[in-house]
Amino acid sequence: MHIGILTLTFALPGCASLKEKRQRMGGLHERFGRNPAVAVCESGERNRLTVSEWSFVVAARSVAEVESLCSEIEDKLQCGVDGRVLEARREML
Image (cartoon, rainbow, N blue to C red; front, side, top):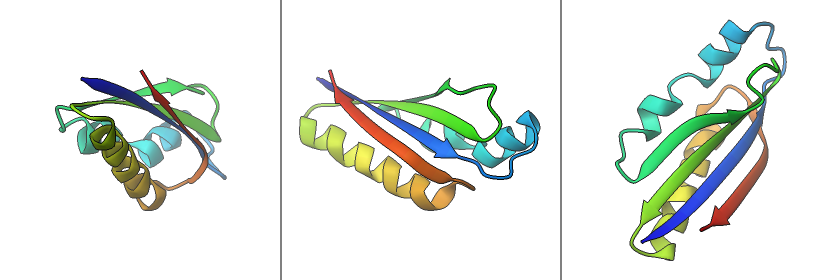
């Protein structure tokens, strides 16, 4: 079993409240948490309005599968979030 952690930091320009931030970032749990190989959580920057950090823990039988799932998540989030990806970090455990 191989495990990877994908951590993405998003810029949310013009975000005026925590409620708006949750709406703009909403649905990540539902979209990616359905896959039994992926766990999703807001991992940082919870109280900053214009920045959000999310981590995705991916488990699979091979490193290639982990990398593929991480790439898929990253690609979907590039277009599916009302914000801009500032940083993407990957770590293999």
